[in-house]
Amino acid sequence: MLAAFLLCAPAVCLAEAKQRLIVLSDIEADPDDSQSLVRLLLYANQIDIEGIIATTSTHQKSHIAPESMRAIIDAYGRVQANLLKHEPGFPKAEALKAVVRSGSQHYGMQGVGDDKDSPGSDAIIKALEKNDTRPLWVTVWGGANTLAQALYRIGHDRTPEQAARLVNKLRVYTISDQDDSGIWMRTRFPDLFYIVSPGGYGNGTWTGIHATEPGFDSTEVSNNWLAANIQQGHGPLGAIYPDVAFGMEGDTPSFLSLIPNGLNAPEHPDWGGWGGRYELYTPALENTDPKGFTGDVPVLQEPRAIWSNAIDSYRPMVYNDYGRNVHAHDKASTGYRTTVWRWRKDFQNDFAARMDWTTKPYKAANHPPIVKLGHEERLTVKSGESFMLSAAGSSDPDGDSLSYLWFQYPEAGSCKDQIKLGFAENHHTVWGQAPVATRPKTAHFIVKVIDKGSPALTRYRRVIVTFVPPGQ
Image 1 (cartoon, rainbow, N blue to C red):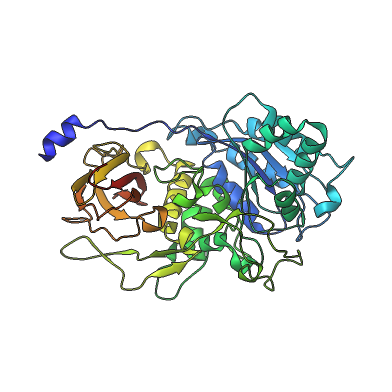
Image 2 (image 1 turned 45 degrees about the horizontal axis):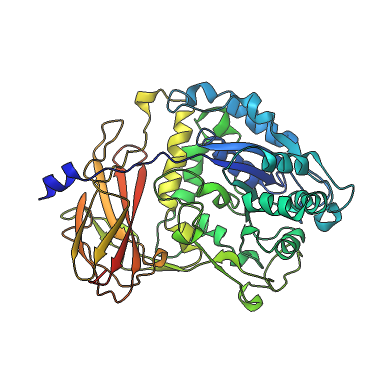
C-alpha cells in the first residue's frame, strides 16, 4: 500500500520566490549588528537585498556608520567566489555596496517631517514603487525613523489610493522599539503589516536567539562555539565577526524567517519559523514589560492589533545511544522566546556550514538535504479516518545518511488535539488518525530531515491537514 501511495501521489515542491529585503541598522551602537550583517551576507543568494541603510537609535542618537557596512561587504567580496562553488546566485560585493545608504542622522521623530528626507528614505520609496509584485520586507535593527520618513513622504505626496497601495506592499519587523517613530507608524498607518515585541527588551521574542535556559544545551551560542565555528579559521568574513558584548545577534531573528528552508512562511507569522512565531492582537500595556529596559524610549498602549509575542511549548529531542534514535526531553520550554529558541541548533549549524563555504571546496563542506514529500502539502481527512505522511523520497547532495523527525506543531493550527504519530516519529513515513471533528480544523505537521554531515544540517516540509466532519 505504501509503495503504491508513493508512486501515485504527486510530489509537490514549488520553488519559493526570493524575499525582497531592506535592512535598517544602527551598526556600531553594539557589535551585534555587525554579527547579523555577516550572517545575512551568507544568505545573499537566497534573499534579494535591496538596501542596507545606516541609522541612528536610542543607543546612537547622532551618528551613523555606513562605512562599517562597506567594510563587512568588502570581507564578503574576498570570499564570494568560494561561496559560488557551493550555491549559485551570490551577488558581487560591488552590487551590495551599491545599495548601502545613509539614513537620517537625527534621532527618532526629530528626523521625520518636511525637509527630513535622506538617501535611505528615498531608497525605501523607490523600492516600493518598483514594478515588482513581491512584498518588500524592511527589518529594523535600530531606530525606525528612516522608514517613518519614507511613510511620511508617501502620506503627503501620494493620493490616498497610491499611498494605500505602497503601504500594502510593506512588511515591517522591528527589533523592539529603539526610537519613538515605531508607535507613530503603527498609529498613523493602521493597515501597515508590523511585527514587533513592544515595551522592554525583556519582552522581546528576538531574545530567544541568545537566551539560555537551565537544563538545556546552549552550546551553539557559547563564545567557544562562535570562535571555533565562525570567527577563527574561516577567512576574512569570519575574522570580521566581532565578539559578543551584550547579546549574540539580537537583530538576526528579523530576517531568519525569510530564508527558504521548507519551514518558514513569511506571510504567515502565526505558523512559526526560524525567526519565531507571532499572533495578531492588541497587546495590553501591562504585558509589554513597560518598566523594563528600553533605552528611555517611551512605552505606550498599542493603538491597534499588531503581530506580536506568541507562546510555544516545546520539548527538544535528545539522542539515544541505543534503541530508538531519539526521545523527548523530560523538560519543556514554554514562552515567546521558545518560538525562536526551538530552532536554534538548526539555524546555528546552518550558519556554521555556510561559513565553511567561504573557505572550503565543495567536497570538503556540508550542504543541506533535499526534502521531498510523497503527497500534497495540504491534505483533507475526514473525522476518525487514518492518514499517512511521508518524506521517503528525500535525499542529500553529499550522499550523507539522513535522519527524520515528524511532529505536530499544535500552536500553528486550529486543531489543538495532540495527534499521536506512529509507528515511530523518527521514520520517514508515519501514520495518524484524524480526531473527531464537528467543524473543519487544521493541524500543522512538520518533518525535519537532518543529514549526518558536519555540522548536521536540517531542512523541513510542512504539511497542513484539514480535518472535516464525516459528511463533508
